[in-house]
Length: 522
Image (cartoon, rainbow, N blue to C red):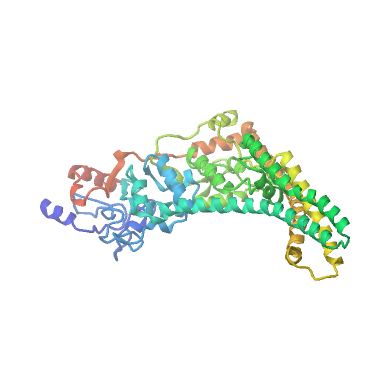
């Protein structure tokens, strides 16, 4: 009988008995299960009168990426690289989280560390496991862990053409952005040279007196040196300013022209990624149960007031992202539980058991609230901005003079004058926008910074309330700590792994008899 039961247990699929009551969880991650007409696999249940089978294993196939019964979404040899279908930021953030936890993670670990949605974290882990020969581990409670080899990055880079090309694309973007900045600054110098050279040519050709024309030629000939002197001066200024590149983020004078007109980009780029990372790590470090007041310092909330005191609607995006739900404690306080962030493969960062002033010690140098950076009008130095404004004014004055001279001309211009006349509309647009755009940005930056200051102040006030909570908030925080249940899945709890072949995983009959007896007694 034992031999027959052992032979049956080696079949490719184990049909499991009807599930236990709803309180029992089934092994998750259906993407790794072999589709069968039977109900979803649950924990084993022994029918009355039957002896337990000697071997049990979850319905998980041999290895992530295997072709045997693998779902269509997993990579096959010679097929598409699954990781290439992920957004680059999701892939990179998931890999950073895997590295942080040493290559053995749960979905909650990656979601909390990387600030990803649970669905995004699961999809990323499945793709990485399929492409890097990662494998799964299943605990006796049905929790699934993803385990990656130490050289998984090397394996992935060897398969993914996209990962090899991305650094080149990023470098090309940087070069393109630099060329745009330099070209805009160069256009200012070119406009000044063209405008004033054309003005000189018009004035020279409009005189009929040869002596007077000679005097004008000599007089304006000295003016022609102005652009040359200007280039020499700019060159000297460039080399002199190389000594203070660190203060201007490596910006030279030509780049400062673009910075003066268009600014230097959003200083809060990546703010949302940072926000969700802080929230996910905070929830995970506190055992998966938090209050709305604890998450307020990381969200956009109104300043504390009597009207907004009971409004916790700002917590909804967090519940949706990390699949949390509200719980009511014995005192009637509303707490928020995130079951997926309570299960981890990491032993570090246990549940916090303190509140109040000790709350600040929990962070150890980490920001206590999300602080947005203020926008800068330009990162160029004051002297560079003054010089850029002066050259812009010189160009605008020259364009106005050139327009008047072109209107007064009675003969059809030719050569340089004709070329400048054709470009004159563009010269007008460039000269006018050179000051119109910065003026508009100045007002916009002022308004944006005022809004940022309000949001920062509101979040700071929420953080200060946690440092000195009143009695009701203190009880609420302590209730959340009591409800926290951080489950660390140790290697000793693993009952199945896809790293080994099914034939190698011969579990002892006595051990399973003991487990089935425990199940029957429940």
